[in-house]
Image (cartoon, rainbow, N blue to C red; front, side):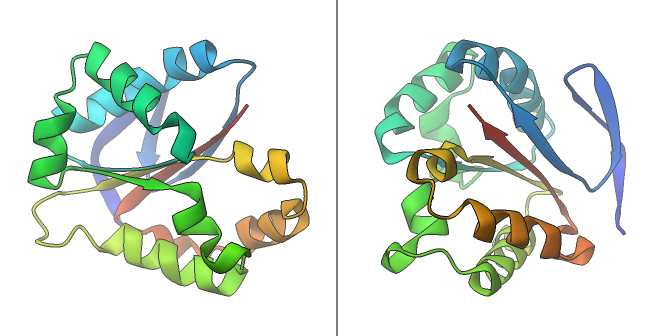
Length: 161
């Protein structure tokens, strides 16, 4: 496993190596109170930010990042910030496929394009699973199958409300 140059703060803890974090929140306010320091730290460290959110929450997400002092327009233009929708990443063609997702996360984790970012922080909002109810078993199976090396060079944080 690739060692991260310095520990990464997350919710009062220090993350020393490439990790997969799963967090559960009671509300969007709680979600952003915990996640924004982690996200902002990533921008300050020059890490690539890949955020997967619900299509309907994209504007709110961008507004919260902006309110935290992140220039989202500049970050998107430079390639440091990439926002994708949950349907685009998890449900192309309307269905979830664990094998396809493992490949997708390998690409996301390794693909900071020009290599100008030392680490990719992949943040995924997972409430679509609970809302649809139909993919929960498949997503849990996928999470158990993601190989450690698929996330090398990245830190993946997913959150559920």
